[in-house]
Length: 176
Image 1 (cartoon, rainbow, N blue to C red):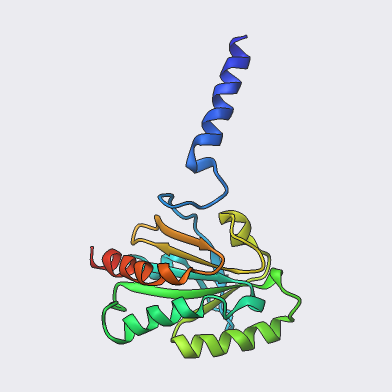
Image 2: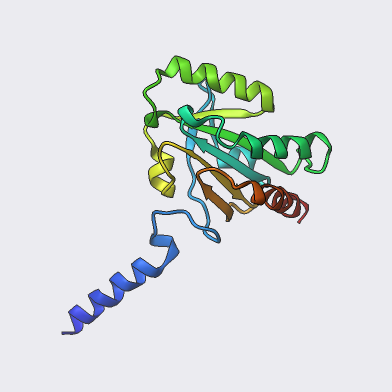
């Protein structure tokens, strides 16, 4: 009887404890990852240690879905509202979510990297989608503070009414 009770308590602990959850949620520390860019250079969250991060994890078929939000962040960076010394926005292409060949994905990513003066990485096996419980066939926006704690996560299109609020969140986080 004690063994059964102990097992039930252990299962309940694991289900309710964020450390055992496979879905990234606000307030949770994001797990580490490593991906390469188009030049085969490897990056991880550690590459931008101490910076607030905005990650656009996107199915290449939906690469324009959150462009309205990314444009708002770029405008804030260009006007020095967001200080690039304390912030890094990147894209990670969910290559496993598309029918497009890798050379086409790299071409799309190259245009986006140039437009936003950023780094685009490639997740060929949906590792991050599975690890963080991100949505397939869409764009996911993740905002992490300097300690890699998730402060916001949007699975799908960022609603227009949340764009300004999320940009302000980035500003607040990088000024702390």
